[in-house]
Image (cartoon, rainbow, N blue to C red; front, side, top):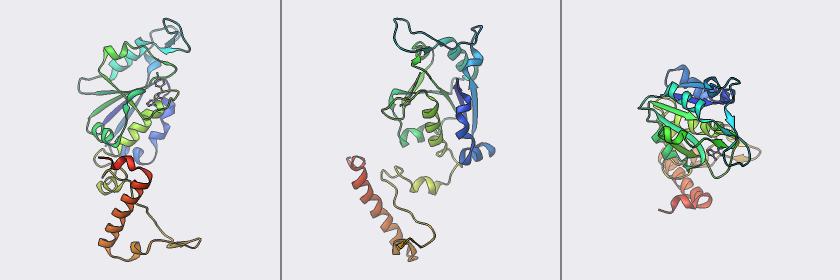
Length: 221
Ligand code: 4FM
């Protein structure tokens, strides 16, 4: 999968260049390109923001650099995403759906907004990561990319994906590793019993118990 990220702050994306995503890029499963929107400004000072018509607080990103930056990476099969609080809320289902594309383009807004005409010039899906406001689309782009990359074939094991929270509509069960006792606290006996059927049964029960206690909304339908 190719992911193009259009941003005024490419240096903000260092977190995508470590750990699992770094390995996914090295192995050729993922290609993440950072494109500086400022490089496309036709203004003599490379300006990419301006005051809103009609007045109001703050600055907006101007449409020309955004338009040219998108066109520099665009092809008709690409999906364009603009993280924004006005979008539908991001979920594991949406994450898996996005992971099936061969080419994603993330457009990161910053400041108080972008000129609305960019949404008339391209088919862009706005996606929110939650009901709160951030200073730009950089962090939510990273959240969405980190999450969907895990669903790209080969990035992590199928078993890891299937055992985690939301994969079966439930929260993940509690997990333990060595040492078997720490500060007087022991690992649940069933997990060291060697009885795989009992382990599976316990994990299912724990998942259901946790979901009831912490996220009963997930059990509603
Ligand atoms: C987005 C600031 C666009 C400026 C933002 C522009 C957000 C969220 C968010 C801030 N994005 N979920 N919540 N973005 O707050 O996705 Cl131009």
